[in-house]
Image (cartoon, rainbow, N blue to C red; front, side, top):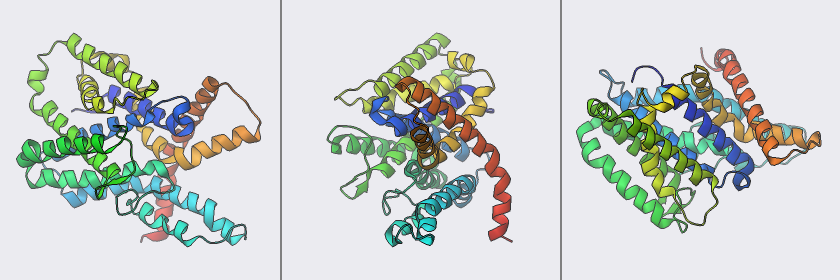
Length: 345
């Protein structure tokens, strides 16, 4: 794929904003906002395949190292801020007793081992996705590097088939969102590995059968993409005792197929360059919204005694979330070199 497709960036931004709203309002506004995570896992798998399919792909260790370099500045800054605010400074000023167990959670969180299965939970709770994406993604990349044909034709399809079957049938509600250990298998890690494996298979199809996909009429691609987006939003917003999570494995690939088709209606709607920039802010939205943006917004609303309708409250929260994420995106790269010099020669 040449360059970035603005439709992909637009949906990265929109779905990340939905995740932020889900963590802020939970079921009060979005019934099942967690399903947006599946979009990111499958998209990550597609991009992982494109990386592994380069003429001269980097080795597995270098692949993991590059991702850590990208993730580390923002993630470690949040860890340092949150632990200092919640434990270190209160202990120093005698407002709280030292909680060693709570403090030790910073170790796996700083090493991207949060929610790896060995370690569960963490203070910056949205970051479970990053740990799973880093560890699970590196394993999948290593499998592709070892034997791509074996991975594409046998191993990854088996992971997708057995993994999703296991998750949907061990969850009492048939939902994909779970932070349990079932039969010795940690569900969030399995969820991420299955999602990225499905994405790798989709990436293989997009790459290998590109010429054949181009013969499909545009209106067919558009129809599949629009219907998939409609169903996705329906599943996210509609309260229901019945789980529709398993249908995400069909509608998200069709949605992504439309996004990766340059002539599709999505790439016409989202052709403005602003979507590319907003999509690039989705990383900062993920990292900072849980323990910085949401608490800051809630404290401000409480201290100012400002009472808004739910709709206005969510609009204001979204605006603050986006603006602060833009600020972090601009600021962190400037202070990272200064902080690096404190630890590295």
